Amino acid sequence: MQIGLYYFIMDNIFEKIPEEIKEEVFEVLVSAEHVRIERIVSEGQVTPLGEWLSQDEREWFILVQGSAEILFEDDGSRCEMMPGDYVFIASKRRHRVERTDQNGKTIWLAVHYK
Image 1 (cartoon, helix red, strand yellow):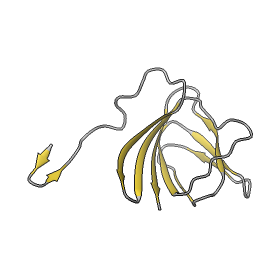
Image 2 (image 1 turned 90 degrees about the vertical axis):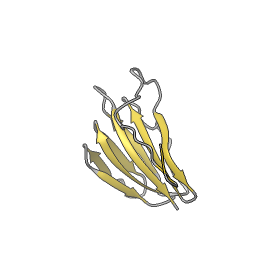
Image 3 (image 1 turned 135 degrees about the vertical axis):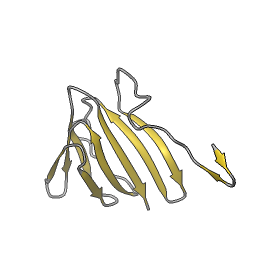
């Protein structure tokens, strides 16, 4: 919707989620030159064994629904996450998703930035 020179979009983070999720769903909600905000929906998916995630950007994310566990390679630390918990991950820090909720959908809101 346009109001004067400004635009806005209204939506709901809990809507438009597929009933059955075979693979994690990544949806870019907003992006600009140095930032990208995504909704990620998981349903039991984890990072495959032996694989590690590592991004060129910094990442901040909050768990909105469900539960999850993140493992960091460098120090072996683990983050058990429940709704409302958030984590900052420095660029290039290797990590993996060890667990997401098996009994429902896990919804993440992730902010990637330089």
